[in-house]
Length: 270
Image 1 (cartoon, rainbow, N blue to C red):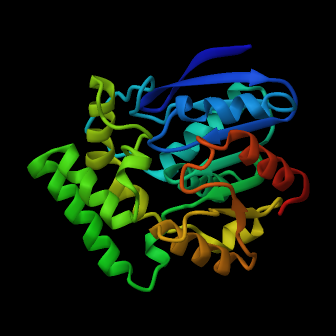
Image 2: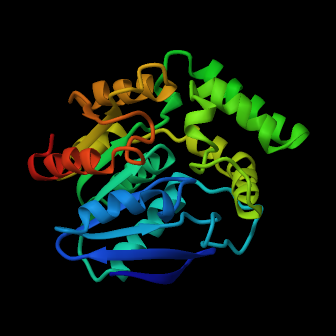
């Protein structure tokens, strides 16, 4: 059974879902919300209490100030509040893409609240040797959004990231067709993309994190920008990345296989 809840946090109201029983595990993206993790959460609910949520400003989680940017730090504080709401001292956390940046910030800001931390394909552009060029590319995407709208911006975002537009859809996980999809895409480009890709993880804090941080990478992600960033983060943390099925969103087509690898990481730490 899946139950739906809301939680008031500073500046927002977060919608979240809980299913299953067992150790607490949070699955998250950004801007991808709870719906994107439904199949994976169902697989893991056999032996975990799985909590998924819509990140602040997206889908069912409205913000008080629509002009406020969403940063990994703010989203990390929201996740710490969700752990509180679940009545837990700590939780295992899995974050992918922008959600991977969230769990990296969570591990640095709230190290006592996390056990195993899995950052799947984090877009840590600031760690790349061509960071200045990457930064300029993101600025061009945001400028394109403000000038030409979300579809034009998404085309540039896909080219910049190496994504297959037909396979990957919009940043939220599906082509922007509904009114909510359009709103989410607009918020992503105007108030999340720049702040997320400018975030610089605290490597010293991450290596000191009690349970450690595991970097995940898709088996089919070789052509993606996040393939580079994931390997660079893993190098700085001193541990090789763990391969997960599929590409950047491999948990969508391969939820059973993805859950199998995720369980192994949670049980062994690698």
